[in-house]
Amino acid sequence: MEAESLGWRCWVVLAADAVTLVGFWRRQHRLAQDALDGPDGPALRVRPLVTPVPITAAGVRGGLVALLLFYSIAAFFLAFSTYQQAAGRSPFQTGLDILPPGVGFLFGPLTLHRLTGLLPRGVAPLGLGLEAAGFPCVGARQLLRR
Image (cartoon, rainbow, N blue to C red; front, side, top):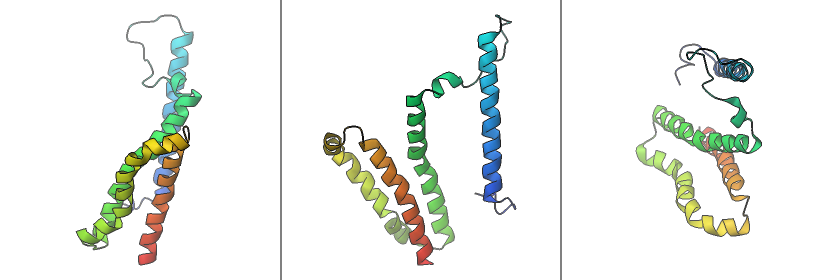
């Protein structure tokens, strides 16, 4: 959150993250290949922190994407509350702004059993899609209110 105040642009931070992630993934993949190809070495041999084989399975990748979308909500609430404080909004106004997701969090689990009867395999993608669509709507509302 302080990157811009230090002169870093958002795209610089994202590019550095991407380069770091690619480098980490290549290193882990190389260590996993060395562990499979090489003969048994000393006990202090470097092993991968994250084994790439299970992560590359199709079902696991989809689950990881779903988890990423689900847990991104924590970052959203942190950024949202920080923005609200900087904008000088009162706690009541901030509560009203965050009320629609709160109502969704209340009624979503209560209606889940009915939705699984209608869409047995489509409830999770539908919920994550609605969540992903809701974030830009809240952001657009904030921008239009300026």
